[in-house]
Length: 206
Image (cartoon, rainbow, N blue to C red; front, side, top):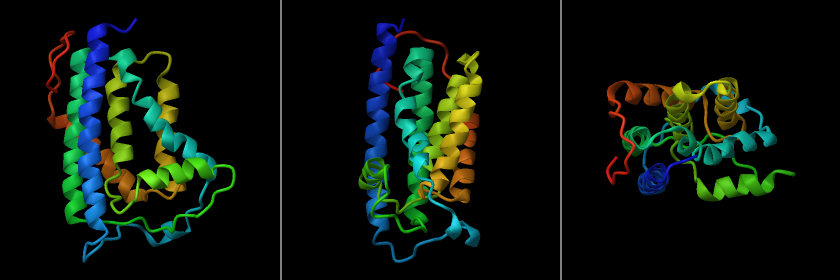
């Protein structure tokens, strides 16, 4: 059973990280539209990447998986996860600001059977900044935080992570280098940010 301090810590940390993401990602996405110089980190062959409509399901599944830490992590572990995700967001925002890289594919106006999800994603995410992929960074940080706690379900979470990584390509949200840099960003932050001593009480800070 999830304890009250864990629920409070999860809710508070989620609010802080979400606000930070909305402000920084939203701002850099907006100003990238008017950047005089834009970058393309993709390979030529990636322009031929097919759109695989059902891949939108693993793509949006990240929004569901962000609830999972509340069932596995203690309050201090949730604070650590919030800390690394926040640092990742700020680091990525700096890269977005100086190296705006729009998505190379032209988004479809209509995707049969899956159009609602695609248009929902498109309406929330005007992709003017693709490198690094925060979708990959966040997914990696979630997996790293949960991995020590997982037992029989490790294969499921690993499969989920692989599908998410592929989905950013086949929904035309990102390219290969976005995935690589997203992984590197998550790994680097994991190495340099020390874990917090175990603490089962709710705290305002992360």
